[in-house]
Length: 200
Image (cartoon, rainbow, N blue to C red; front, side, top):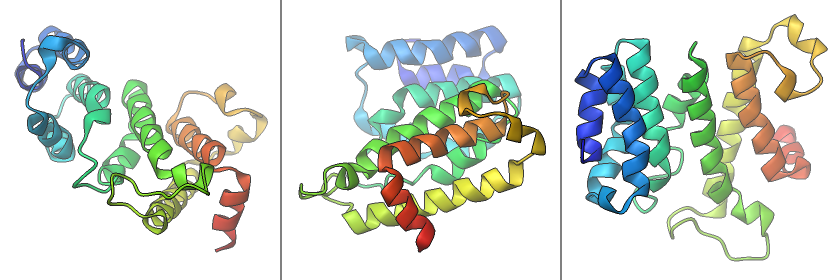
């Protein structure tokens, strides 16, 4: 396993041990000097993740696949893709029964919030995301994400969650995973911005 492509081939086709080892090897390759592969191949792997994920049937293999994507997700192409290009897939993963998959989806979604909220956190600075995304487009993406997260929270709500004061104390569940993203969104955007979204 000397390339990320070989790792994903093993994640998809190897036995349980090989698949698990390959998922962990992706991180080593991404952060090592010998892991420098063709940037376009990494972008293709990330861009095609939702389609490739559909072909994975076993839960343990799904976990390895998502873990592999999550460690290289930050490398995706910002020039040609809107930052929300994987949001439908990631929002679906937030409801997966496997906690490791949900947590990887939380990390990937939260990763996108930084670049999307620069114009909110630094309003006096001229802002475009990689020269492609305007403040208005970022606002639209954030609004859509806020609505999707709220709808999902409403669907997953159980009366038992009332007794928990903090998100961190919620029982491990899809509800908690979605709430973690929502909490980060509110934290990074600020309550004034979120209040303005709610009023729209």
